Image (cartoon, rainbow, N blue to C red; front, side, top):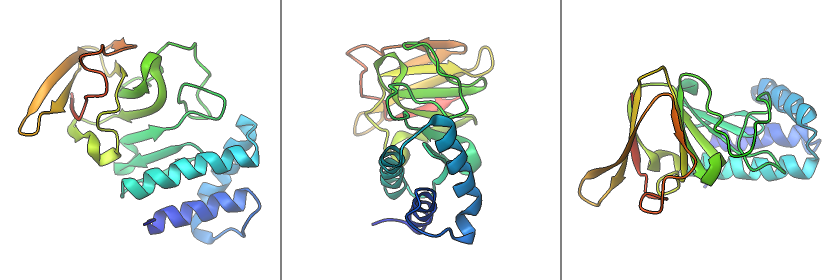
Length: 195
């Protein structure tokens, strides 16, 4: 079942694609998406593919808001999921520079989890200090690499849910990163304590 927000953002994206007229609620987002589509040089089918991923994410994790052609935010932008742009392996916002493959790209003062090895796939980021249950973002058992780029010395601890308790998998101290969590911890992260 799709949320009202997902329907609104889909309508905005469809207007960008020339498939529907804009609604007043989606004008600002629609304008931003149109600008990002042009900047990234995306085709209509590529935009439609990204929108399908965004809609699926919004339906699975209520409370989110689409903030760009390939991004969803929660809690006023303090948690953000970024999807890789078509033809790219590493997630980045359209206005972020294309980085070197295999290099972390978490913004300063944020901590990031990546879906695949070498900082590839979806990127889920946080900027506030809190305990986060990754199931709230449909990201439990999905982490393969990470980048802690918070202020120097700030820690992030990642946990696995054993069925009865939270078990620590690793703790990182900023600035640090890992392109692969290792076979013992791969796709086992279920929660993390940021800060």
